[in-house]
Amino acid sequence: MIVVMNHGADKKDVEAVVERLEKTGFQIHLSAGVERTIIGAIGDKTRIGDLALEAMPGVEKVVPILMPFKLASRNFQEQNTVIRVGNIEIGGDAIQVMAGPCAVESKEQLLEAALRVKEAGATILRGGAFKPRTSPYSFQGLEEKGLEMLAEAREATGLYIVTEVMDPRTLPLVAQYTDIIQIGTRNMQNFFLLKEVATAGKPVLLKRGLSATIEEWLMAAEYIISGGNSQVILCERGIRTFETYTRNSLDLTSVPILKHLSHLPVIVDPSHAIGKWRYVQPMARASIAAGADGLIIEVHPRPSEALCDGPQSLTPENFKILMDEVRQVSRLMNRKMDDVS
Ligand code: PEP
Ligand code: MN
Image 1 (tube, rainbow, N blue to C red):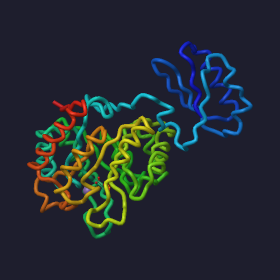
Image 2 (tube, helix red, strand yellow; image 1 turned 60 degrees about the horizontal axis):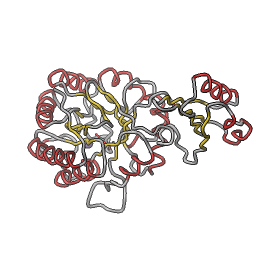
Image 3 (tube, protein in one colour; image 1 turned 90 degrees about the vertical axis):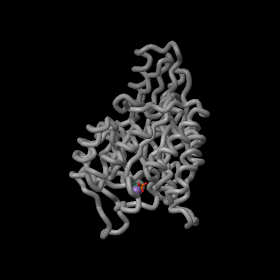
Image 4 (cartoon, rainbow, N blue to C red; image 1 turned 90 degrees about the horizontal axis):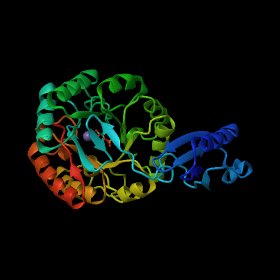
């Protein structure tokens, strides 16, 4: 349930409502906006009737929420969540592009990728140090050495870092190196991991589960927000369908739907959705046109030599073309594109 306070409500009014709710066992999340305060209350909604909240001073209305996600919902927070990473913002006026190799393979590979994506206008460097591979015989990532290389590349380029965590045991390590923690598709409903990243103090890039509905995905975000971290970025990366020509099916309808249902930033990963580099550029353009706040794109200096996801990786040259096109679509959408320098 959400309690909307009216414009004139003062601190005492808010505190009285909070106290009454807490006494009845509700968990409270306050959103103190410039215009008005909104109180999110999570608990046994059969008890709302006994509380006479609407009769309390300063209360404008009580809105029962039928959807199971509350803190992630736009009913709870009307204005967009804008996440600050260094001197850039995700979910603000500017489109942000994260780019880099699927996996960190070596210092040279990563630095070359980083310099090239930066030159083209990316602001965040992606690269996996812990890789979730379908086969246990495939390259599993360089682990801590990979994290060190990411930090070196950040130092050398000024790009921010996003990298995946797969296991709560390595979370402190990953959080120490990265600017944004990525939760991969296979872990979207690893509730234990979600509760842990909620306390890591870093923004979280939450990828959509392979077969997750939008509601399940927002419930996963709800785990992180209710655990104390409201800095969640949703990432559409394609879902499993009957289509086998592409690796997954890019569900771009999720972008306007999420923008309607939620205040969280939404970015799109056309690389993992499609799995074939030649279709990444058009779907990157479409993602921005659909209202996404950014993109995450796999780029490798030599895709044919990549240890992971070469077929979907763009060359730096093709990435530059993508960025020039995305810049044009961004302009049409009245969005800016930042750079880190
Ligand atoms: C990735 O971004 O490297 C990755 C493994 O993506 P996903 O979890 O979407 O498959
Ligand atoms: Mn990949």
